[in-house]
Image 1 (spheres, one colour):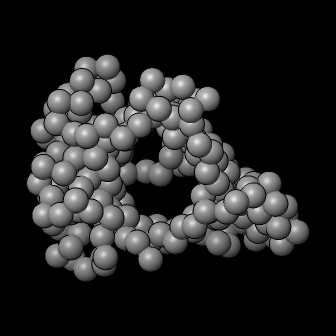
Image 2: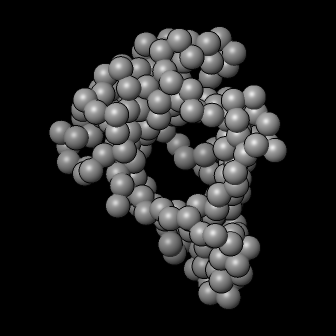
Length: 196
């Protein structure tokens, strides 16, 4: 199980931010992600985060969807916010047939209650990393109905206070380096912001 330590912030000037990110991070691609959160029809609170079915297309650098590969990722998270930083215990796997998996969820009496769609650009920032796998994932995201956000994420092996503190320090330092004011940090989940 991966521990996802993440910060996201509102972005007012996406084009200039994109240039700043390009100058310091390694570009990994363009993406289009459509999420549906499935919950029990009999008890909306279980599971608390729902089962997320993400249909994701990673495209080439020009954003040409014809060169993209669609993946269906299934995720279950235990979510927590610590001092404006998300610390999520995440279990994720891919399925070869998203429609068949959704049919299984329906058979299990789950229904898709919440949805979101985001597109954007992805990079890896590894200038302060000890190893390549310690890099920070950087995504500049356009979230339908809300606008632009920057997401910075570190995958950790545990959620011990010292691990989270170090990750928080690295994430905030990168936010500062990119010129994003800390008062632009958004600690609410996207589904909350979308009123779902």
